[in-house]
Image (tube, rainbow, N blue to C red; front, side, top):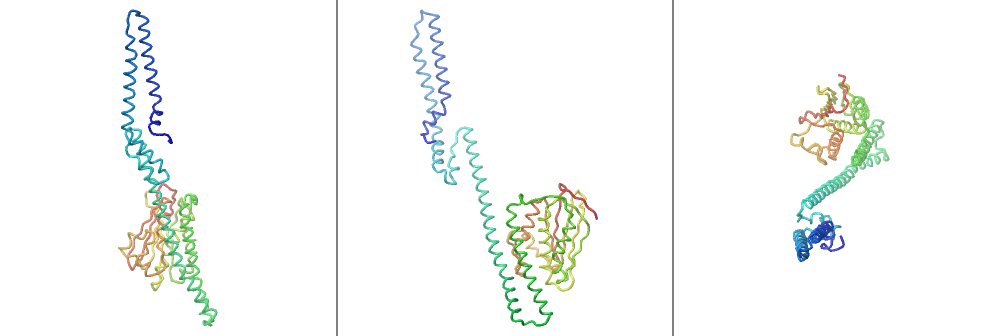
Length: 358
């Protein structure tokens, strides 16, 4: 629209102007035919009057239509001149016709959708930047510990085999913390491309649980945590992502149970919910979660009182577990009693494939 609004207005109404010319020509033609059939009548003066009157009506209608839409065209032209600005689409507000109102509504909806998408993207970027900074801060601790342990090994302060074994176990534990942190970072990045990285298939959930327990076997033995699996269940899910969720449950159980003395249990219950779906409950005997922290434990970067006390929490593990379950079509909830333990429950809806064997 580089030409003026008036020229564009006239061009858009060529069909009506053309129709006027055709109707006017037909009217004049009928008058001439009538004159030919009645030679004695002398009313040729009515033809110019007819042309002038019809032209006046056409021009008046065009002027009236342009004047009532002039503000709309001015706003539209202003929006086009500022088309490189984000707010250009909301400049056009003075719509008159139904078509213009629909276009204005469409522009507003597109603007709102774009702003929502931009807000989500910025929020995601802020979360990712915050997580990276927090993750780097968390990784400093195991690196510092490993460095101190390495210095002790170089100085050979611990000459007894039992001391060297304890030193090696400490190094191994810190290494596992770093590995867990790296995996968390990797899964956080993958979550942005969740649909591309998704491979659904029927999976034996009890076998996944068993493999996750085996991966944490050494720490479970060290802190006297005894896992058990009750039942079997096949579900339609993504093995990799579900393994990640189970890892969060087990690592949290170890993290918040190791400070308690004596033997602790970590129970996995797989049950039919009698509605065609399945339920997995994971119950530990850790320190539990305070009631005022429960509503927020699935929020990003929320560590709660326990996380601040333990000093090992990034506040992303349970957030990612919740996100993964939601995207897989599973629901995740939690109950806890402070000082006694926590139970996480995943409900597998009956839209998936479930075969339960108790």
